[in-house]
Image (cartoon, rainbow, N blue to C red; front, top):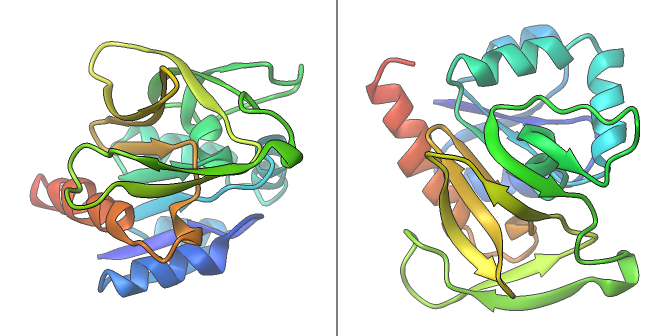
Length: 198
């Protein structure tokens, strides 16, 4: 299985390293050919509006949207969560997303850069000790639709959710050295899709 990390902005190298530690081939992707060649995609943190605009500039916005809709396993972290949500709250007038994830996500819900923080979370499905989560200008999930599973919450707000082939976290697991969430993505979403022939 080949996993791509959308290499337009954000923690691309860190996600590639985390996936490599899980034993899978991962590389940065930004062109149509590169995105068409991967079996799954990680959309890293960064600035969601900028990533969407760059995806359009590189001519891959509609391709990513289409591949997500057709069942490509996709993991969005922080800005990536915003970009795969069907509804965005507190976005700019020109805010666009790839969609697919039946949730309302609020941008910068936890505050500005100076409000960044770390906390321990219980994450359903990964087992072991609580996961140390790093929140940086993070969104939260305002509401979820049918078929969306809440995997972790903080102060009453979902911060990790899954819907079928889609996984999203408000926080940045790639910055912690703890690869359990990346392994969850590989084992629970990517391999399931591979078995189903997607």
